[in-house]
Length: 53
Image 1 (cartoon, rainbow, N blue to C red):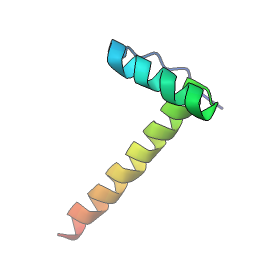
Image 2: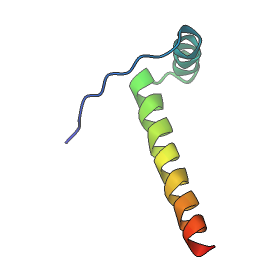
Image 3: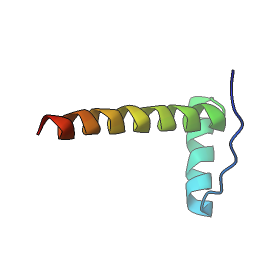
Image 4: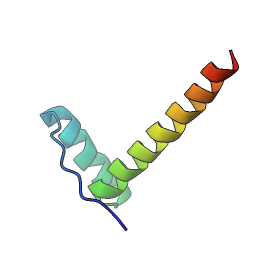
């Protein structure tokens, strides 16, 4: 199952996203999904580290 999410990006960020997507021949949605997944993993790891202090 997947959920549709709408976001607004600054022009510069949107251009950078487009350039990277084109360079690696992947859709922008792929990059956005991977970025969110990475961020969530990083935040979970950060929370674990804080809990150990």
